[in-house]
Amino acid sequence: MFEQLTGRLQTTLRKLRGSAKIDEKSFAEAARELRLALLEADVHFGVVKDFLTAVKAKALEEKVARSLTPGQQVIKIVNEELVSVLGGPSRNLRFSGAAPHVVLIVGLQGAGKTTTVGKLGAWFRREGRSPLLVSVDVHRPAAREQLARFGETADLFVHESSSDDVVQRATEAVGEARRRGDDIVLVDTAGRLHIDDAMMREVQAVAAAVQPERILYVCDSMVGQDAVQAATAFATALAVDGHILTKLDGDARGGAALSIAAVTGLPIYFAGVGEKIDDLEVFHPDRIASRILGMGDVLTLIEKVQDQVDLEATEELEKRARQGELTLEDFKSQLRQIRRMGSMSKLLEFLPGASNAPGLAQMAPDDAELRRIEAIIDSMTRVERHKPRIINGSRRKRIAAGSGTSVQEVNRLLKRFAQSRKLMKKLNKKGRRDAPWANLPSF
View: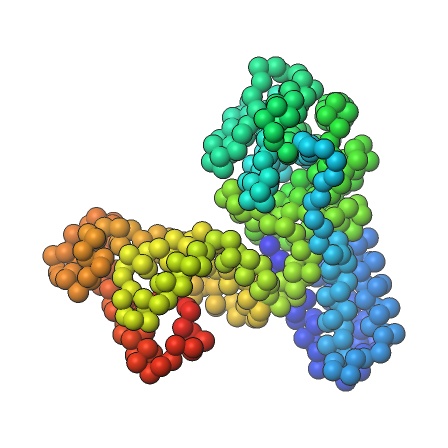
């Protein structure tokens, strides 16, 4: 989402990096570029003004650290102020008192509330909690059906009711959670295309009936400053505790993400980063700031690997690869683990300096290519996957036809796999088991 902003900020800060001294004149030029970059990203003008004022005050008054040049000091200050604008330290969604804890999800129609309720339920389940989901949206015909499908996908209990009274549906769900022993109730409320009195009265009635411990506003990151205005209206009418950003993986300018916490004074707890049920991340302002400045986000990448990769199975594969016993069956399992973490181009964005190498993402295999490779392997027999040397010309034609690919693609896969096995054997013979590339996938 922040590609354009990242490019502009890096260009501006690069000019300061080698400066021997930061004075009023040099900072004024940089501040003008920073202002344009932030305004073009649709950041709220008040946030931009406060941000630049804070950066200027620190940049011109703060003594340069012994290990930093003046330019580097400004970059450090910009990073610190970005973290502040994004909400400061990360916040955990904590609960107190007796269960069940009710979480009311509010927002405008189209922001992704129902999808977010499903993702949040799956996140709570991974955290060891027992969530119950309920929709009190009686206006959008498909809302309840959509939430029911999410429940099936994530194996979450979704409360159903024959009533069209929103308050009754919510109170029934809380009672059902208490009987079942569920400790979290996620209430999906109705949205409108814009703020109106009827909408607010309805959600206020639900809040008064179930006394939610947390009220979270779902903000569409693609909307920009309009989302900030809507968030302010909700915070005025309800005791909103914080925000969940959706569509942070989109190609919008990112103004909402950089404005909503600063304008409302409320933290961002989560960010939706994809369409899958697991594509919900805890929002870390320091990591997002680092990503915006092109410094990567290695911690989030590590967490993705830990969540999605079977480390024991990976260690066993590594051991077999060193012994030259890796099969195409093994490689298929590696592919599936990689695909669960997301697209390769998205994963590369977490690496420091990736934004300075625009060709890097294009070099990474896309999801379609990974699916084709998996289809080729699936079209092989079990014996062929374990002994690819037996795959002759007629077998290659059959595999290509069965996978919907070409013989050339089958040949390319087999050739690269053979080369990777030779490389692993050679490294093993030379005693290079501790080489930094030893833990990388086979190709």
